[in-house]
Length: 164
View 1 (cartoon, rainbow, N blue to C red):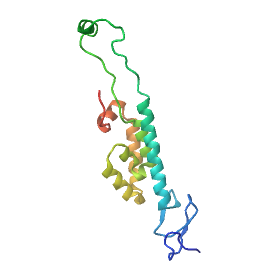
View 2 (view 1 turned 90 degrees about the vertical axis):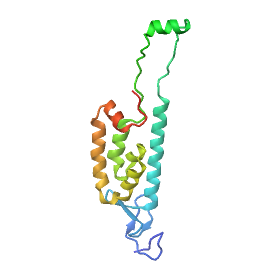
View 3 (view 1 turned 120 degrees about the vertical axis):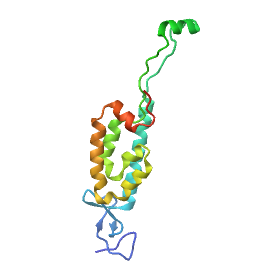
View 4 (view 1 turned 45 degrees about the vertical axis):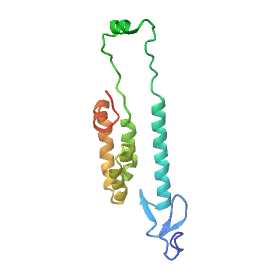
């Protein structure tokens, strides 16, 4: 047996499935029954956060264009005559229930869905207790709950930037 690449004095318990380096009991993090070093877990977490940011950026970029008063005409008289003063608006969503549901089901062990909602303290609690598998179970339950809610119910409960 060889020694850990971080703790030179400690015997290794296995190798990291991501980087292939020998790791000791202190450095080992078990993900889905496989040994992973803490450095690779951190890199995986940061990579998934980047992917979430890209998803948010692309969803913001795909918002529809709005043309106001495209028909021309004159000021207040034409707008009050045509609209009656009551404009119908489409709801504005800032969080996607599909993204939240998939994050909760796939990465709920690490609380990524909580970070997506901006609930940092809850996300950190999920990270601290991920080894107990309780956050994984909660993530699956929450993910299913997000996906079965209607868009409006989801937005009212979980989307802080929602406007009806």
